[in-house]
Image 1 (cartoon, rainbow, N blue to C red):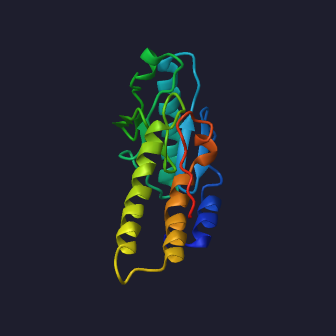
Image 2: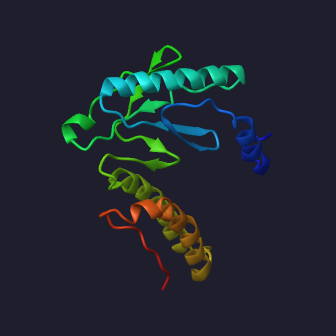
Length: 181
């Protein structure tokens, strides 16, 4: 199936429907999988995640899938700031996974405090550049009408800014709100 095909997601979901049982909780969307585990000690977390990833890697090999050790990262979310920067020693296919303090899952940058500051600052760059482009188009003599530019700005900027809004609206960081006058 070509990438982006409507049927591709359904067929892939059927293809991986029988993923092996793991002790960690899995969050799966299309071909993105996140394993999350809560444990008493970091060593227990490392052992469990390494074992779970070994089961998943074996399954992937059986079904001719290739998990990316380059894109796979570990992160720690802990109530104590001094413990949250701990780097886990988790391996997949014989390679130690890279530690990422602000992992990105489905385009959302996560942080320990769940304030989404990193996500919001990264997301703000896209609407700004789109707004700059629309502003430059509006300043030309051959540019589109004001209503077309307004509709374009809302369509291009608002959707990006509102991505992850259900999570970020609980954040103390202000959200983007757009309107045309």
